[in-house]
Image (tube, rainbow over all chains, first blue to last red; front, side, top):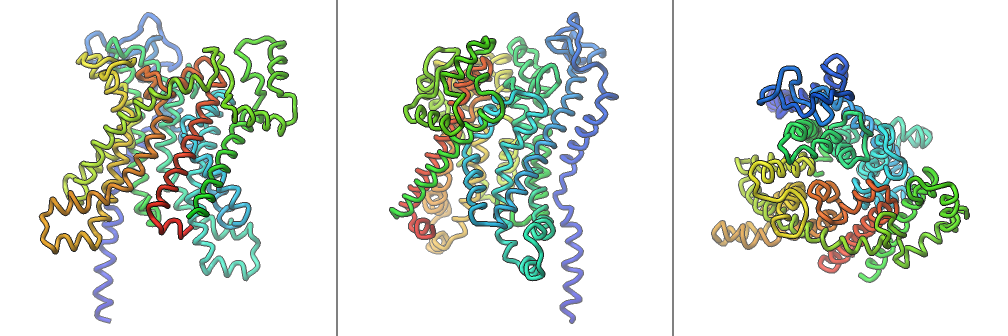
Length: 294
Length: 306
């Protein structure tokens, strides 16, 4: 008894502090900041991001010689305001990134559960396809798919979903295999639940944590892939302001020293990916001890 | 042993089959493949001619048989832009990609292995934390961003290195760095965890009890064994590097396979795009198979388990 009364304060108090240890405050603030900017892009952007004044081409940022307060972060080769394009670019990255992660997550989780729970030939078929698709280099595969279906914002989301669902399916299937042997699932079978009900009501809630962690970790990968596709000219079609597209345009001015056209959108991509990765790493350790080894 | 290898080969063949089927079906089911196989702006008569020539009016399974038959002969079609067989084009670019990948690999191992060992030996201390920051940056900075910043620094401001093209060793430095950056971080992470595992093992304890100086324990006994998984990963990564360099090669105008893919998408040269993705996937399947077999030869536990 004495030991137990001692043990309670010893274990419980540090837990509260420990729970917040390494809390990725800055990454979360950055992600929320980008989300905020994306939502209120209409209000925040000083100019139309798709229309420029040719008379005001290649203006440097305000603090540099030749810059003015009129265009805080300068203008690009068509005289479009870089700040406004960055702000609207946040919307493209957020929308494409989040929806693609969700599309991939839903497909991958569903197939992972079905594959793991049903087993047999269903499992074989799904896992063989998963293995094969995992062997395809993601970016090359995505480029191939855009060549087939043509680039548009909607298609990019579908393509990224098609390329990345395999990552979820592998991990989720592994978890289902061990969940399947647990008491509560066996009891559900004895109680006469159908396979569909068991997968939906008993398996799905138990793999959601892993799916969320994976999704956060995938967000960075997906955003980089989207930016790469836009950079190569097969992503979000111009004149829409995507960060990757801005980089591709900015590359032309790089050799003459128009640094703001590449450094600024590049920094935005970097900050967003870095934040997503930091948040994902933290969530992985907090939510899902099984994934720590990943 | 033989049974294990045969089964692994069977799986790989199945993967290659599914790979070709995936590519084949995506082209056929998402639209009109004739539109992809004619040059942009072709007339209706041309489209019909292509449809006939490639047998696109036949049932799907006949089309697939034809597709596989020409694949087996190394016939991946004709490039619209270069007017040469795509396979020849691919082979002519392969040495450049290999050169870039080897340089990037050398760089990534040179950075990744020492920093990984340092992080493992000083686990939880300054160098470990510095390594963690480094690996996070490596995994988070997109390669085109690294490439463009390098150009800005070393070509535009310092004027030390050429910004694009190939030919000299100087041309190789920046693309190799941009491509190897991500992999340096991956190799560091693996070196660290593999080293930590080895350092916790019995024979290291024995070496220490024996009174060996610490640098011999680390340098001779631990290092050698910790390196095996890292070198395996490096082998796979070399092939992956060849196939993911598209962005880096585009940034630096490096004439490898990635650049070929980029040209394929900008000139709407569909046979090229299809060939690059097919051959890339095939290459990775084959390398995975080779590594599995190699492991089975080295480590009996693996072949007995399977």
